[in-house]
Image 1 (cartoon, rainbow, N blue to C red):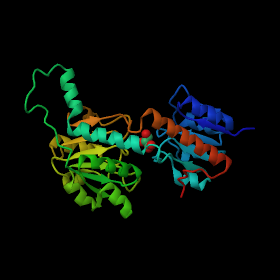
Image 2: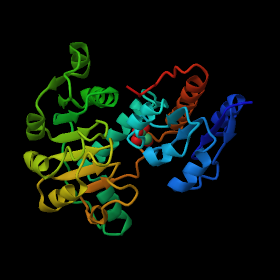
Image 3: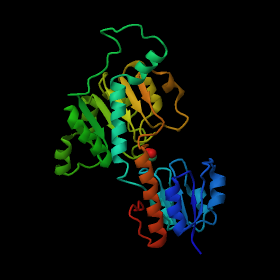
Image 4: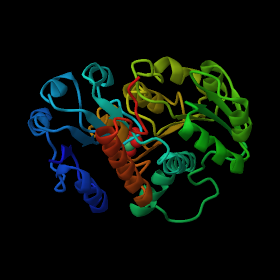
Length: 320
Ligand code: DGY
């Protein structure tokens, strides 16, 4: 008898076919949204589950999944999973590092350039028929080339963002829990500074850290006040790293100049004030969403689940 697994969201057919070779799969190719009760009911007899970031795998759900041995998250972030509780129950948890670095870094640059050059504001202006003529001072933006980029979180994605800054001839500062190796610093042409220095000196501050209790509201009112009035904040990491209410206040008051956001507190119900602001570029959590990357994320999660339930040794284990 094959082990029973659950795939909580729609995934690529090819990946599902691979999973079916190893497991008795309950899928959700209709992409129905399940609440905690429905999820728990479906997990009752399952040994493995492939989750997305919107599935909360918390202590209550785990308590109702007595046979569960592995959770494979289709994401690099895994703040939707209570890893400590999984560890206590002997459940392996995996993520998908590496496969989404480039797509996420590219999208971060889309936000940097879009916010600097007021792209969504310009498009709305044009679509609404307001454009009557060329004007010298029309929709003036900020220069990216030669500016200072501050990267908070110098893991794989932060590094990929830094490498792209070389083409824009930027000065790159970074702040991270630990200083990275000198080879990485020189490859990224990046200088380690304190968080306050980074906030004070950067024209663009971009976030690439995980969401943890330590990074909750890492950027709040006090931090926004330390930034330049001309600065632009970019968040393609996780909602909750930024205090969205404080950000709205800062964008309205001109404490900073603009923001480019892919992630929010309480997704998808973002702070309604954000929708009213012109000086923010908004995207619906799609930084990793290229055809190849999302396929590779699902494939990597499936490989992790197969390894977890067959060898007990998945490549991307996140339990300590
Ligand atoms: C991740 O991998 O954590 C992304 O946010 C999901 O798109």
